[in-house]
Length: 115
Image 1 (cartoon, rainbow, N blue to C red):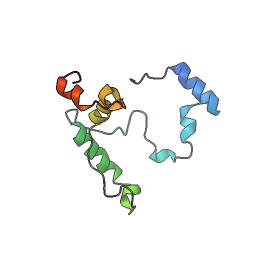
Image 2 (image 1 turned 180 degrees about the vertical axis):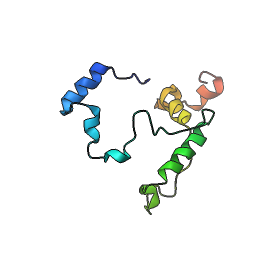
Image 3 (image 1 turned 90 degrees about the vertical axis):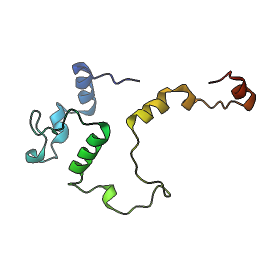
Image 4 (image 1 turned 45 degrees about the vertical axis):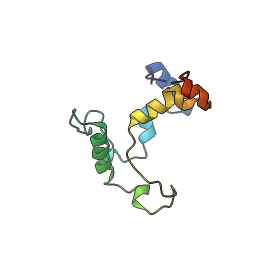
């Protein structure tokens, strides 16, 4: 399902539901001198960068702080981080062949009734 951006009325209703007056109220615990400004401090990237280059660039920026990848943890049972394109997720979610529980049996496959 494609993302539909929130309207101003949607944002106002959400802020009212959680009891704050503005989005800035959500960030009061972060010191003002390290917050990203609305127009400044944007992440500068070359517009011709591919997905993998952008991921590497962002990871280089994130490497300036500590995260779970900086520590030993034993999850994955031997399957560790590797690049998977976001297109793969899109195909897996929206292609009916990947979301059906139906498995064709051999005659259907060999007769060409399923592709």
